[in-house]
Image 1 (cartoon, rainbow, N blue to C red):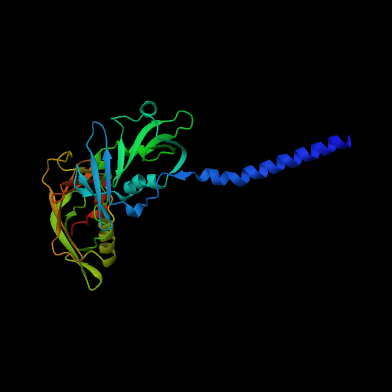
Image 2: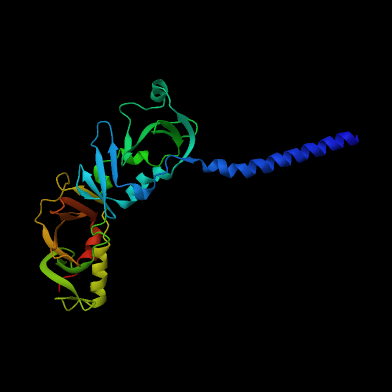
Length: 291
């Protein structure tokens, strides 16, 4: 009997020892292995190669990302960060030097989508049926990863355009714009708002300094629902209203053209050949009431 109790005690001790060991090792296993040692700061060029779709090229100039093909426009930083997130994605399993048959079975072929960061290729294969993770081929190693990148890669090029009307590093110093009638229709009157001695002033004396500050802030932080190339955007046929924006430390102003329909406010940029589209309700925040 004593020997049986002793054996039971030893078995219990063994179970607890194994439990402790597994829980000590598990965090290390969950950390996984990264796909590359390259960091976000190392990347200056992003290329997306898609079968049957336009190649998308994005380049970094100083601290800003810019879409250069097939559209020339400021790039959306949120989407750039999502693309670069593959650099620090964990690899849950790896297979080196797979033969052609294995690569084909896992979805790697001539029509596969490729994300190219500088000169590094990340080729996207199938989704593994059980874990729902994706196979990615990089430097002749197939990795199994949690994929947040692939859905972006087949989006149209316009979805990579920055939705901010005015870049973060551009500060408005002067603004000339039309006004609204009391019935919310556009007036033929225009006003000019300018910063002088640290305060906003306008040629409409009915607007207080606080009202002018709120108006300028609305322009400074305007964020479009979508941005499209003017060549493909469907804009109203009505005569546009001109808006002129001056920025600090820049001699040349930027001209915009305002149009509207029942649902949408269009701020079109002839210089960038882009159409920034907003909900029509924003019109009341961007334009003052006519004096």
